[in-house]
Length: 370
Image 1: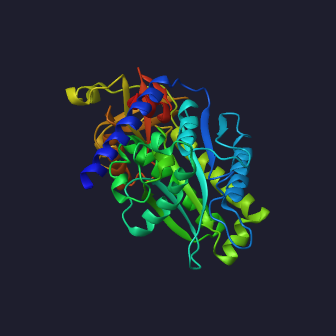
Image 2 (image 1 turned 90 degrees about the horizontal axis):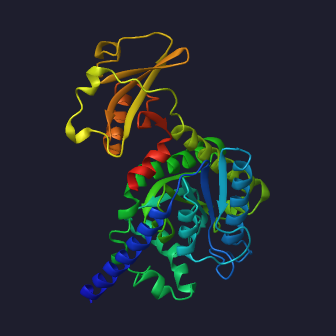
Image 3 (image 1 turned 180 degrees about the horizontal axis):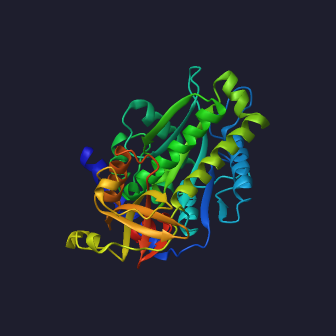
């Protein structure tokens, strides 16, 4: 029986990998930052609902439309919706919409439920659930596949009730895991700091809708419809407006962080000499960590930067910008960022260059995957 399940799962991964590869190859660059908003459930699938008539699908849609309305005020953002009305959309089609839009972010909005008076919000990224609670949340969301036509064909043996089916689900999202966690953290922080909501944290679980996408992706459980007070809040115009604002602000903060790449590149000769063959730019893309900006032209030496070595300097207008490290490996860049923050540069962030010119970090990460 286990052998049979394993074979089914392998077939499932192969088919999804093939379709993922086709989608990535078809992508082209966008002039705008594309955000795909996904209202969970809809149509014949109401999601979680209560005896009082509260429906997850209706709440999710209203919050999504609110988020989209706020984001669309920014001329640099393009919003794409998986649904704007009460219709049923297959899970695999939601991911397809995001991939074909060459999206920079995918945000799926949901509500939670429990047989107790549990409350609070939590945001998920794709991964292997580490406890039974996370598995049950993912299982409840994934079971919608049974409402889809030809679900056996579309998901090739995937069984939402089987823990074995989740092994390896996160493989194709690994390149975006850190960005997904960053966005999820910003959303949770916005809920907690501005709305004073109970913070249930950033978590990992095997959501099919997140597995279908090839960009940073999160699933937001905005609250529990089964909690008397929280359910009323989620179902109110006030609650939906506040949640929409918090989510949109988190998305804008995320965009701001990945768009901080400005200025012209000047690499000190001493830094060039330290790059090994293994660290030379792949596809002409490199990453550095911006640690400071000043009107003073400091020597890029360790004694001026709390002992950090491999410092480079750029002139941008009247300012000099200082960077730590130089690598074509994004994973190494993240470690360099942590090193810089541990040295006291708390606002250090990653910047990207291609062919010597600054580019958006989101574009560089897409290029690395492609």
